[in-house]
Image (cartoon, rainbow over all chains, first blue to last red; front, side):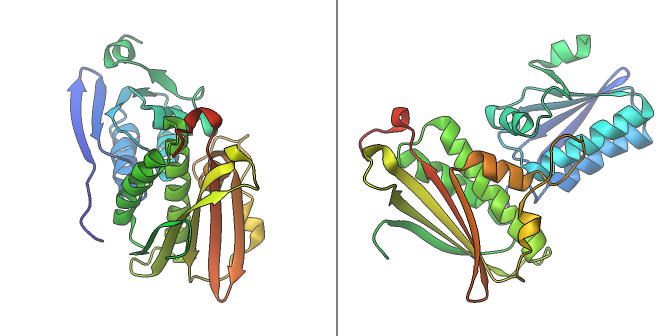
Length: 116
Length: 150
């Protein structure tokens, strides 16, 4: 694969919550990284609350949305929570187009998600 | 270059190229006077169409040829019928038209959303098989508010 603008995923542990700070566009080139990070935290570590901070994600495609849906289903299976924070207009639009916006727990800020 | 043609490129079926094409689509549609939501719609549709070609038509191979061309088009004689057409050509196997319908959104499950995004984002979506190639034609017309007289 050619070298491209890579996605960065930083992890912060805040008590029983893990926050993923994601920077970059999520598309076919890197959505498997997002999927792996989320499913590892939800299925293997069974972290009670996982926050996906998307403040610095300008674009997400259908493969990225599929990764989020898979993570949401996994979180429901194990009885924990997946929250999305700081959706860009493009990210909000794809969730609306796929009728998933109301399925996810979506917050404007990290503070609101942590308090939720 | 033929009349109305704005851009013509060949790219490999490598997902690392997606961000490059998105950047080009954003700039081009901005220059043509599309409003921000329409810029995002066109960019999303082209990105999803390329993703489908890379995944399904070429089965994940990284070095197959994709041709992308962009044209300025007019819808009849209507003044507000200015638009932007994107043609994507790949040389993968013939696609079953039944697979181009997309899935229903009633069920919450991953996958199958790309075609839905394309159809929701563009005014015209046409697919045909021609001379051993799959040809996808996407058109987006300028909304009145978005026109700047260019």
